[in-house]
Amino acid sequence: ITKGRIPFGEDFKAYCGEVWYCANHRCAARLIDFFEADRKVANHYRTTLVPEESYPQTVLANTPGLSLSQNILRYIDWTERKSNPKILTEVDFGSMVTSTAHFARKFDVEKSRNLLSQLDEIVFKF
Image (cartoon, rainbow, N blue to C red; front, side, top):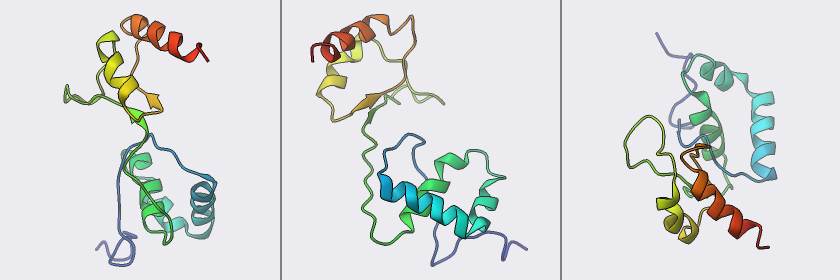
């Protein structure tokens, strides 16, 4: 029943990952070119719940010659095991600044106020 409807197989596998990731011009061009050349994969993802967690990862992971990394360069704390990451507070400051992350999430204007002030002090030193 699904033969021909699902665009995945031995030569083209499905992948998933974070919504938040970094990519260079080559990756962006590949995503655009792939979308323009082959709409069956995009059409498949039209009916999925969170396509942004799989479509770009699938296209890029199936592209020979690209070097992909699991490091998304973001500090995200999932230790609370909820559907959303933990809201970061000043308790997280030390871990954040010693990580290799270039970005962080998730902040709340009120709960993260002290942390955001600490980060401003670092950023605005330069």
